Image (cartoon, rainbow, N blue to C red; front, side):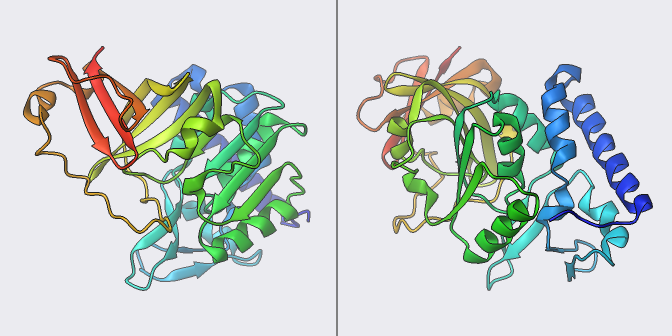
Length: 306
């Protein structure tokens, strides 16, 4: 449904949105935010996807409604993530991501009209809604979220904005969505210790998977992976931090790989000097002097000198 806000509040929101776009351009480069991305960002206000958030300074939850919106705009449109769900131990299990990073991820996905997209970790639904704008009415976005409360909130926000090409699904996204595959693009909005094997089959050849790799316990790596037949080859990767993937899978993978063969030699290189690829476990090339293979669950990550 249309949002009825005082004109001064609406104008302030648009000013905040434009400021975030300019900040993203200053961080990632003028060419990173295209006119299409800017239009999508302006059409899908962030606050519509945050019914409540954890206020960092007070440590208290803030509920958002039209009457209180103006007092929360500085937080809602700050260039920082916001916690939107905690578990019983008080640990954040979902955030709405930092806007400048969201804009850069949209740039890296290189979304085109009419494409079919799968998102692992729907969260607030904001990212899915932005992608829905970029693939245009004849494209499709399927976003799967494991937390029922978030599914309900995301569906309501998307319905209120009359976005018809985005579907929010409840369930474990680590299995992908075989009934709708293959996909032109897939994107993770949570970090994973391994690449789920389903994605080797559900991404189109030459399609892109934007993957958040849980490299070490306190370090994730955002990677742009291009499907090359039976494996994924990175075109770009850089450090980041995301909330970890929550899955119904029972096994726990240790992120520490210090005892793996060649670990010390591998660490002697700057990651920017190395290329990264992912294979199904057992199908990766053999380790060599300038190639390191680390197994994680059903997949193998392969680093080699670029």
